Length: 297
Image 1 (cartoon, rainbow, N blue to C red):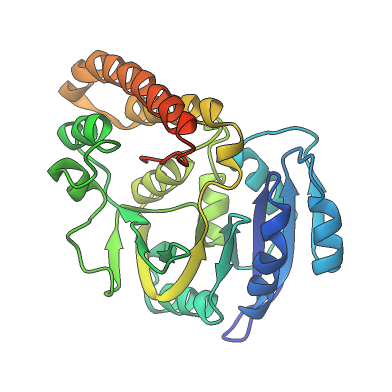
Image 2 (image 1 turned 90 degrees about the horizontal axis):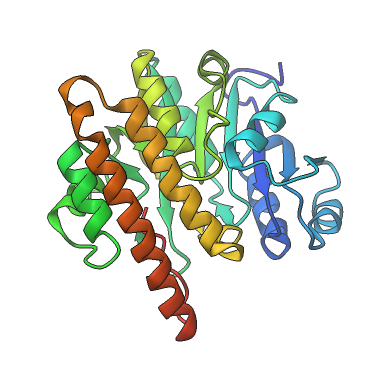
């Protein structure tokens, strides 16, 4: 093991895809926050990410997958090379606050049944990104799916994204964003990491859902802060990512819906297909107007 106890370090996995311009600050922040071993797993980047990592953090391990395997599968490969008691999973386009990892670990230490804990995530302008959310029921899922991209303050989205909730207070939640979280290694191993069937999106929702099924709670810790740019890798292939997002939503709906509610799954499938068509049209219009795409997750 890489160490235990209050001064033990953290193992960190950074999943990279053409994010060379952000890797230096990301790695520096992870080191400053206490990461002792860092693996940057690369999903077939064509930029100078490898050179950036070598120059910014020569002690970091550079792991090439040889292709774009998706977020979860790449993270699993990197995690297999690490063995600390606490594992950090991170996007490459974020900066971790100096006390963030210790605050996350303190929360796990204080609550033995907590398996995963996520930080308060801020956008670069300092505004809050709602990274702690609920597992939506069928009504909220459909309402958010249809209205989230065009009317983000609708009641379905507000409930799903916990927009009316006090994000300055620690809490237990259904799931936290996979952009950055801390997980006990025992929990990661028991769950088998991310489900590699999810290429992109909802692998974090699925992980937290399986953790809850296994008896582990999920926490949100605002004392830990992370600044996240959002979408640096995903926006390079917007239509593929939109398709992957909706495919993942269907996969999770099929997996998590139980009992009589499964009768509504055909309606969900039709709704997701309509939502994908609408999202692609919105992106095309936005691109024509040079408006950055909006991820309505």
